[in-house]
Length: 209
Image 1: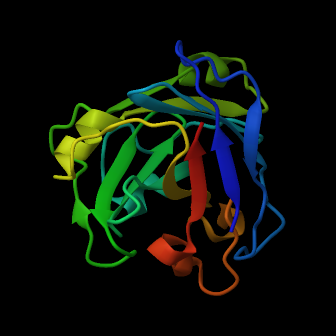
Image 2: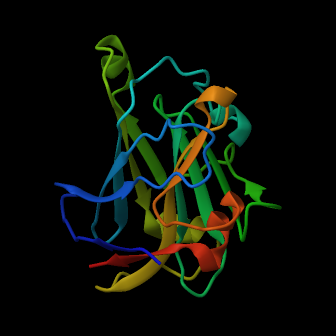
């Protein structure tokens, strides 16, 4: 199990990479872009910034849609099990333009699609247009998750921060089409089917310092 220590930052400055997506066990080619992950948190918000080391291209999807549509573009994913005693986890997939897909559940199957539900717990920012215009060799985006609002949204107990609190999760890099560009990368490695990375007992550990 991989362990990610997420530093406390009152102003949410994520200064340096804390982890990487660099394991491509389930891939059909050598297209294996490394993703740098910057992470920090304060008492209410956990923040992740992703820098994806592949040339930015025009995305196909600019609006929330089904996961299969998001995956036509290169996308990064966050799996987050916010409460140690509850096996449900959040899946958030986002492409370079900030289009996203959200679902909740215990595994990959039979999940509740929450993409179109009103939520106030996720904030996504990116530099898509600027990077696309510059034909950048990388793309990046930032995701902020408000933990009190997330706990309220999924009917968990009230969020209370204490140093050393544990969550579970994983980070993914996904593109399913076209076949010659398809790939599946992860931070916390699983050795069997890629679907195993969605199981609560196959997630890495996040420690909020």
